[in-house]
Length: 514
Image (cartoon, rainbow, N blue to C red):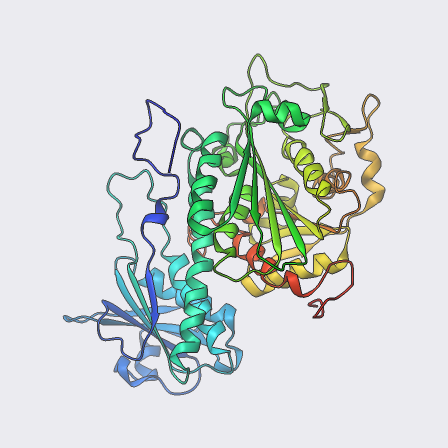
């Protein structure tokens, strides 16, 4: 990928190392040509004969077959076996299958050729089952190795699935889908894990252009001169302290015949020091290279739109800069002039994400889309409210929020809806400008969303505050330590079904999901 010269960074460095090593995923009826075979064992029913152990023997080893458990049974010859817990067969679903497959990935971290057998579908659609199994193994094996001179674990090269009772073609289609969705998340993880010096706003624009060429979406990049001409004072104001120019990156997926138009707006703060309102030097400060996780999730999702057959028009706006202090940085009390004319009083320079997104939201609504979804690592309040397991969602259109929630359920990227309580809007009032960028000490996730609502112009809108689940402190199921890529699969799932129904409660060829 094209990068600007930097004497401290080798030209060979790529911000998306996983682009170079995608596993080949197939559905087969013979798993003899792999290094390791995982076999799903349920807590009820017969134990598959190929493990060579009875349930009593497995129990004596401590293997209880609960979802997420695994027992390695090594042999002198390949392939060795891994018993993988599947839980009760009656409870089997896409989520349990994804987690069971992830347990295999964790149990065989060095195997380059992996096989996985599912002896019983248990009522799960074969295509959905194969997709979930693929996602579980591939995502659990993810490691960011872009800056390691000697990676400790080899990448997964081959994944073969055997689903008893399923037609190869049907399950194969699901595996292919799972490979694409896992790739979307891996791209988002790569970008979010990359240090800020290795991935500036101009760098991310270069990456987007290259990914667009590869995966079939259009990219338009707006530089500083264009942003000035466009009146994007929110983005430019935050950028004032940086030696790196800001970039607004527009992504477009425009299939023929698409009637609905979904727009995604992402926060792309490449590094957030807090600006003049400097953050304390604690572990959270170290994670602020991940403050562009919303933009990364959108870009990851875009790599999968064409191959997933998304029928609606999808536009992405990524508002990108770093937020650092300097002699030229914006300060408390400044008033920023945004696109569309709204003025914003700066009460805290660490509430910068909403400032850069204000310009992008105005540009988005100027195109009169069917709906807008904002995605951002926006507030620590979201993390404090819900912890690291789920994101906050809320919005001005319940039908759209419900669709976001349904996509979250389908992908196991969990969200919880908070109320868009407009009684808190007065906290954002300013004596000198149209609005201020900070509310009171409480309900921070809600007041941040209320700020964004001022710029959506009554378009159906839903918001995802992904500060909590943006990263994992340790490996957990298919979530690998580091950046999780949260939102990439959720947004892709939302876009896949968006053409069939319009937000705002109306339908066009299908009902809104509950």
